[in-house]
Image (cartoon, rainbow, N blue to C red; front, side, top):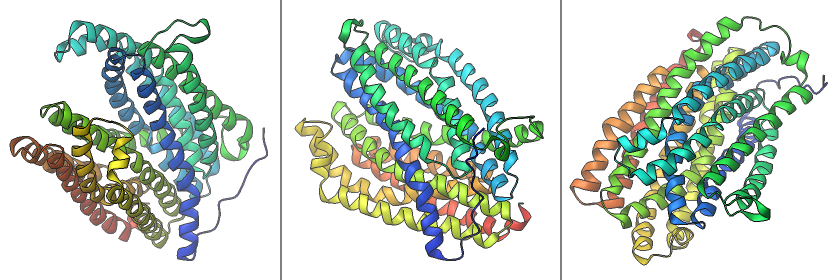
Length: 456
């Protein structure tokens, strides 16, 4: 048992302290989440160099497993909330119990998702894919399925560490994982060093190996280098049933929220597909760049969850509001700089992904419009994190449904497809959805934080 232990710091008294503590949590999380995106981007790029057919197999298999994985992650997001609240209230032994309860849930969800991946070929045939594509992608989905329990176990452990203010180990593991993934792809996709050239199946196998490595590495750190007595990492599961119920109570609406958001953006991509290959390629480039920038927002969102959760645990209404709004202010500053880059050098940014003149023309002009999406998209993510820290999640899920399904999707079809706006119209619809979500969530956070004493 390690003796590594640090008492929870006292409440921040000044805005400068709030900013420093938010950045200390947000930056490692930001880069760690970006690492997950880089893993998938490298898989796509290396598979694409094998052949376009293999890339098609990979793309068709990756989309369903990412969708199911995001729902699973949503189910586990209560881990960081309960951990941060217990840590903030001085109940540090309870944090380890939360972690172990989360591991049990992650294993159960992961095995369920593994079973779903075995139906992949039938699903793809049902939605009209060709027999060849469905068969090839179906095999890749099965391999991906074996990585899903590992990924959810890793996420559960990472959320526990973030909840007690230790995000750095996950970042270091993510850096190693990206290097390992690229090397395994080189072996398994292309057949180097005597390995068979497996194409898309090789990429999925590399991902599976890497995800299990990530879980075992972060679990080993937790088991060996965290003060197991102080944080309750070992021993009886005191109040386990109560914590499990609370974890699910928070997780169900968060899973719904993840599904609503990812499903709505999937719909926008399908709308782009109705407009032809140039428009869908341009839209995909735009969404990839937005997703990369969104990792910054996710870092601040997690920091907001932890710091708001700590303040809730201390029964500190002023601390709740300052923690949440400080994260909002910081994300606006950072994403404003990113938006300036979108406006200043759009052609250079999109040329990283394509050399097709038509695609570059559409994506470059639409990217300047996309720059205005970044701030409301980041703000809504941070406010969602703040509300998650208070465990106020069902109303936020309803607000996501309004913003993305009642505003963004109909407007996207109208502007992009019916009125012929193409990728430009879809981007404008996304802005409308994000600004709606940001306004609704800001109103909700202001109301809930003003009466936080009733929520704890």
